[in-house]
Image (tube, rainbow, N blue to C red; front, side, top):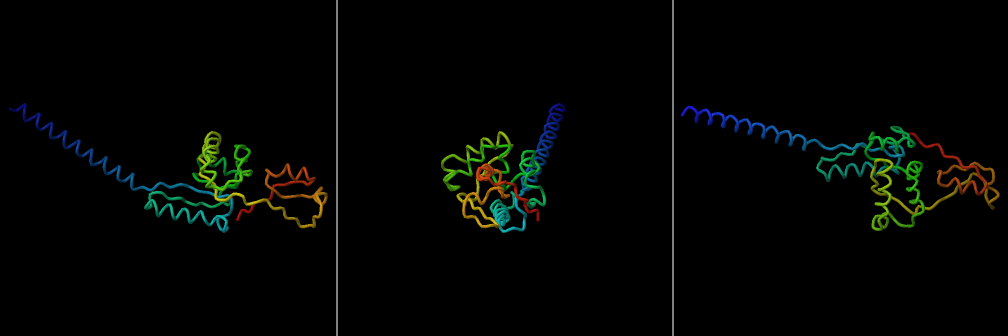
Amino acid sequence: MKRISVVKRFSCICLVFMFAITICMAVQAQEVAAKPIKLRAVTFLPKHLAAVAGMKMMADRVKERSNGQLIIEYLGGPEVIPPPAQADAMRKGRIDIGVNAAERFGDIVPEINVLHLSELNPQEERQKGTLDWIDKYLKKKLNTHYLGRATSNTGFFVYTSFPVSKVDDLKGKQMASRPLCFPLFRALGANPVRPVEPRR
């Protein structure tokens, strides 16, 4: 009889112990589930500019739709990380979301430069597999995922502070441009330079 009561007592202790562990695990799982996921975001333009106002709207919408479980912390732009260093910051995991111009990644992922030649809008690029194609290279070379772009077919404009009536008027002139267009300006006889970017 004593042996049975010892076994019963041991079984009861084990059951209570297992029940306590189960409750502790459930509480911990609930606490983990209750903690929101935070993603750090940076843009290539300063935070106060209208061109990146959509970032705050997106962050607000994501927080609302996820019931506060996913939070995008918009840190800012060049005042936080200079645009040339943002690609590397993403690769190293210092930031989670980067809103940037494609040419910023062109040195590391030259395949991304095809986006400048695309005549498709963002929705068509998604449907035709362009996003998947670009994503493959960004994953491999930058440890990032390509989610898409907001604009396309924006055109290319050249503004000068001097009159131009013929191509020769550009010869020897200093022209601020993105690196993708340097060969064009050199072919026209101009001296292309990268513009200084706003930091505030």
